[in-house]
Length: 357
Ligand code: NAD
Image 1 (cartoon, rainbow, N blue to C red):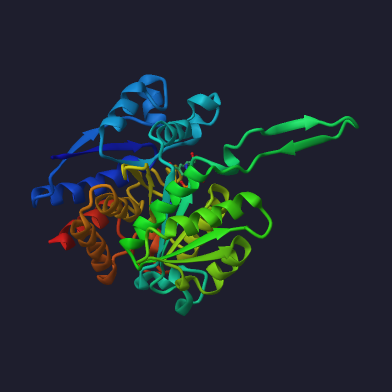
Image 2 (image 1 turned 30 degrees about the vertical axis):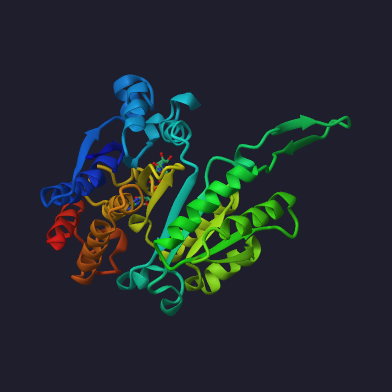
């Protein structure tokens, strides 16, 4: 059956980078990829047109789609709006409305870009880690939460770190399934020596791991994981962790690569349906100038084909094409070395399409 992809360009550089991703998708469609594209509004663009960052029609379209490709949302012109009307609420609403609990954040460093990292070339060249972060539970959502005034008048802030077995099990399965498509190693990151909730996390991971005897499971405390990520990051294949630990570790891992314009991400539900987007934001400082790097969005399309549509070969084709344009020496300004000539957004997109063959 023809799969449906909902395209949500969003704000700032969103429409520019999504246009290049669409060139790639359309090229694949012309050579046999069986998908149907639909377009919708989210973020500030949706607020401008419909008065809300996530109009009911967009949520309906998202529910009906097999996968969603999103550019980015946000911009300074929306910062004074009431919180529920701000562009970011469009994103949060999609994640919650579609129950996208599994956040996949790869940290990949193409050897051609090793100089972009602040770490030594031999430590990061060829890095390829996948961080699987639980996205809809843990301390960011746990109740009770708040700030209360104690009897002596002092204020006390509190949040609750809580995970149910079922929540741990489903993110565990997500990580093991992904590891099966990669190098078959999962490192579960916890703080089981101090936090009871992550002691349970570890027990459940061990239990789930029994269903995946072909995948090697290891465990690491989060403080050690932070240290190992900057000491010897290539030891990792898939890392799976809680919402807050994943938030912190995935940003550290992304910065190992030094190029925010290169990294895609995915947020998946239990059935593998997902929303795919670059990790960067709407970059209002460069919007409309045709200089944004479209590669993170193009690589988000590759992730979408791999993880939601099961089209590994087509995903490989896109990733190989991106590698080929980097080999040719093409660089947008954000990944160009000092003094190196750079190309614009459209030129980079066209080069990837040409490299697809
Ligand atoms: P940002 O990621 O948009 O930009 C940070 C820096 O990286 C900027 O200098 C920008 O020019 C550069 N950059 C980002 N993407 C690039 C690309 N593809 N090519 C070249 N350079 C790129 O983060 P910010 O400036 O903190 O936020 C800007 C807006 O984006 C805010 O409104 C924020 O809320 C929003 N935001 C949205 C998302 C999202 O849609 N998922 C994520 C983060 C931030």
